[in-house]
Length: 466
Image (cartoon, rainbow, N blue to C red; front, side):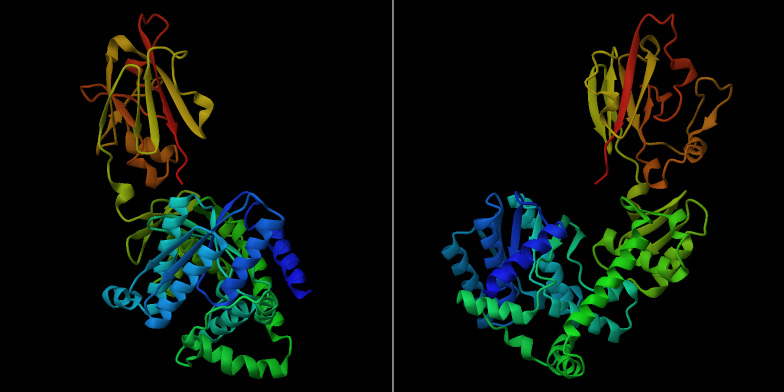
């Protein structure tokens, strides 16, 4: 039967591209349309037959754009959830009103509302990802839409089978298990399992560019090439692979390697920068070609230079990398804190421990990606220390040196990233004399010498910034 063929095809796609694991919790975005209904029943079949520990959770957002039809879809989704005994999260939002108030278009407002909703439910139920029902037809239509618009390689790469979006409330992982499935296969599958679905009347309105491509352009192209869906989808995949290879050598966590960027052609570097911005911001709203060009050229500037992006972001060159920060947040000093002997406290991304012996410390030096410790003379510091951000004009004399050094110069010499310098802990006495700064030597007059009667250890652990 054809439904068995489709079932095996989707299982293979999920496994080959590692969209999610057998024991994961997956949100299923169910609009009520044919594609999403098929996706739900295919994933349920996978859970029932193959991955019995897979957890499914239905999500539906009523955009309030089609009046009674939108409410009908919501009720349809609610009843499917009840019939299949699956947990279901449903919300309603007036997308048109939100778009009007934000000055955005309806499509962008709807997409943001959906992803924000998905992210919140993921967090609430502990789901690893959201499965959406984009098909090979959607891929082909997207390729044509972007080609007409004048997109470059990154845009023509089309819809990704797995992608992470960074939103204001956190990140959300989107997976598309049906991206190698054609719409005709979906229709045949639903007919075989005799499952109804909702028709979205707006899909037939030629006011929308995608609908004109679907109902007017695609039929003509199909006459010229009966395999046009496969052809366009394959081209998108090839571009995706080429672009992924270029970008993979450039990206390191949330940073972009300048050395690797210089190995690309200027055109490829621009597209790598474009995708880097999109991955960090979660969108490309108001990002224009001039911004992409300026950030690309930032790779040829000196460390510390920055480029303003629309909204609240800046791209900063930090030695051998480009990094994106929210404007001014990385320049703000943290609130100082007081640390008593045998205490551990958090200071931004760092935990700082003040212990009277190494053995009694509750933080192991090896427990994090970056950690430091210093032995100090307790008789000189006393049992109280302060932890603060650097100040303008800060100077101290590290052990082994015979003069005072500016903390600013030391941080530059040590290549501490611009975005971390105001967050970097400076440990002082109650009288604000600098005792120690992680990555540097202890101040000469506070180092624990062999003759010191009372010694203490300060440990600093930098936690991974997610």
